[in-house]
Image (cartoon, rainbow, N blue to C red; front, top):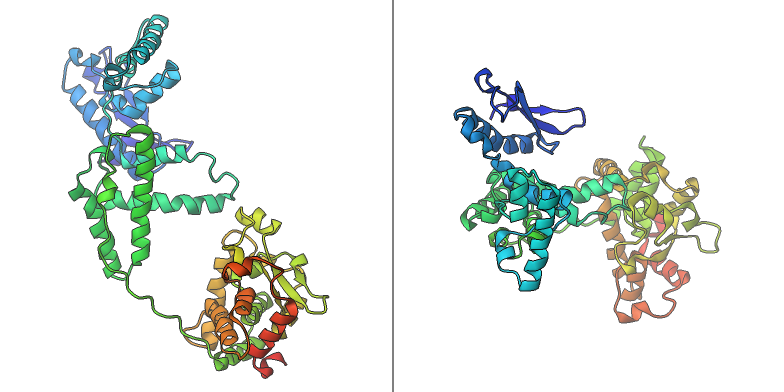
Length: 449
């Protein structure tokens, strides 16, 4: 397919363009035009190429015929969604297929025919496309891109309260498998995809898993998003059709995840020593130190406002809870689980770090800022101890607490934010004093100097 037939317009959308041969410009169909321009309603070049193929075939065939073929409408105009749009926007009637109309009850049929006769009476000169919209003569095909478009319509407003970068991340989970399916299988009619063709996508995903390019869980998620889109779109527009993606299955077995390398106290000492002399920014050093002594993760530390670093109390602490900072930046004020809401004493270098940054850490308080921090922090940590990451600091706190004599598991959970059993949701919970005593037991004395 040549790029000569698609043109990107000023608004970013692509249009189909084809030159009308001189010997055909006199025909009523072309009205003396030298070029045919039709919008493709997409800003994606690959999608534009796919959509333009049918139009190129239609006009190429039309140029090889005489005037008698001019009454035949462009088949791309007779698709279900195009006729549905014509019926609803031009005539203000709900599109019904010919089968729906003929199989309707008497009262429903009277209403449908009445609406259509009224439209014909009001609009006396109807095109073939308009007549097809009223008669329900659409071809029910739907490309995978159209499925995505209709799914977005169904979800209109669902994530409007989220920042744009977060919305893009969420939609990317659906857009990526659509793009990859077209690359692996082709832009097929979703309503008529044979199971053998659909399974090609599963095979392509499995090959990527075997090469180590993709985790099995990620491959399964891609299939899950395709299935959920088709399920919702079919339920609204094509309730009698079978979801073609239900036949896609990732047949590889989940491998046992490699256990994260455990942090030893010596590892922690090496990190603290490296931070003392490193030229890394004090912001990065301080977040690492708070994580090392509290077990809080990067997002919890970064999206905690200044007022939740309580440093003038008898027991200084960090309050990890839903807050406006989190809501304003990432669109939700809630934490991952109810158990994550907690107060954790600040000790050792964590307390010193918090006091150096009384306004919190606005340097990373933006959408996906915690990811940017983690990438930077992991590079720093690997210079001190090979193979270790920021996430491992949290697991070290958990391990040390559980290995400390006399520290109950419920206290461990209250410090690191794990959900407890049913009793954990009642009463006032463990006091800061109890948590402080547990943390002091779990922290080597030389760490507190």
